[in-house]
Image (cartoon, rainbow, N blue to C red; front, top):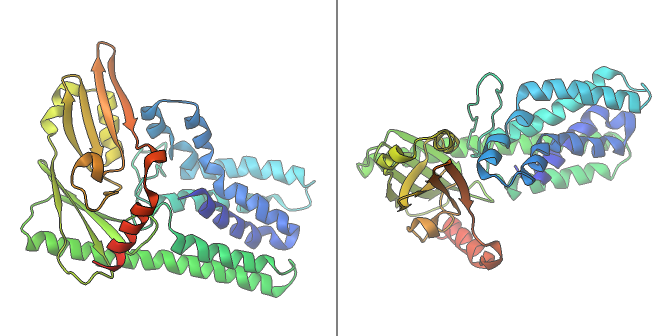
Amino acid sequence: MDPLTHIVAGATIGELVLGKKIGNKAIILGAIAGDFPDIDVILTTYLHDDLTEIMIHRSYTHALLTDIVMAGVMGLITYFSFRKKIEFKWWYLFWVLGMLSHSILDSFTVYGTQLLLPFTNYRVGFNNLSIIDPLYTLPFLGLLIMALRFKRDDPKRRTWIMRAVFVSTAYLCLTFGFKYYVHQKFTEELEAQQIPYNTLSTSPTIFNSILWTGIAFNDTTLIVGEYAILQKHPIIEFVKYQRNLHLEESFRSKELETMKWFSQGKYFLEQKDANTLRMYIVKWGRSDFNATNPEEALIFYYELTKSEHGVTVKAIRPDMSKMDFKKAFGQLWDRIVNY
């Protein structure tokens, strides 16, 4: 999730646990706790290594065991900082809930979170929430701001905080309902169009939970399409890509295996030249719904280059300064409401 969402969730938890004891300081500390696991972003900023970034982000700092242990460390620091005026158990509860909120919220997105490290590096991803969803964050933020209008001993402050918790939780539950509904739609359409597949996953597109991406694949073909809950046209138009898995043979390496692990199977390959392999990871869906060419339809891809020193991985990202954001948002809105 985006940092603002984590900050709002953490601040809300801070108010619930310690608001009556330390007032607005609970909001500030809660915001820190809610965004604390993203400390790994600081590490990846200085790495300049796309493969290591993939391995580090949402790994140990987002693991449940790390949250449980680090909550004890941070709890002791704040316990003594506030001169033991608040029992340690409350500080521990505050930190563990704040950090867990971050890790669990991230697991709702398509990126995937290694919640169960060090026992397994499986990427937990429920794929029911976009990494940026104003429909979730803005009401949550608005209700939190309403709560802050009242003094910490005013019962209305707690009432507004509980409303924030209820509304945000209800929206999360609603997205699971949406996911179940659209997953059935994709399943029915794939069968109706007689498209063979082994695996199907669905996830919301960016900034909303109304338009969803469906990604199906087998050993030879990857299929991607979009379906909006509001759309009037019942047929889903799928785009097919040959996976070209035979190209992996000459690039066998731990780097390739790491990329396959990160993609969770949602990838296809193209040969750029004898020493360079393009790997299109489709887990985020298409960024341009009118395009089928991989370089235009997908927001970025990776290049694996082999040499006598081994295989290197480089992320090929779009030039953000040249992107037409007005056109992109217009296309997204049109696809949601006018299809």
